[in-house]
Image 1 (cartoon, helix red, strand yellow):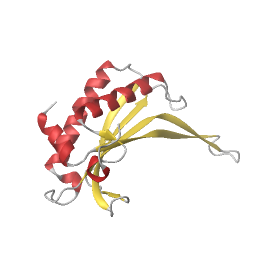
Image 2 (cartoon, one colour):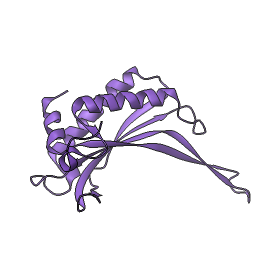
Image 3 (cartoon, rainbow, N blue to C red):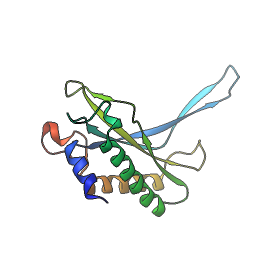
Length: 160
């Protein structure tokens, strides 16, 4: 992985958060007894980076964002090559979206999402392949210097 991505991660105080990825299934569609089920189909790993004073416009439109997106895409392709066929890993960019950090006076942040899901059918919950892929993604992010939870630039070292 490029030395440049490590500099970008440090410069922008990159950090990640993991949340469940849910799908909603509607059963009995068109009947009075329609029911909706929520199934955890995987995980979203949201990677954030603080906007810096030399970033033009929206944080997701900078060269740093493009480099981060390309690097995460490379990282996920490597992890995907070791995952089972039933597990899917994708990078979802949010280049034209600014996330406002409520803990830091609404400072704008850029976000990239790594979605880990399965292809076994929508009614099947996430299992060991998705959990294993999540562990690999987290390990690789930490290796790059991306901490979990709050960013290092605000409150000391990032949590791991």
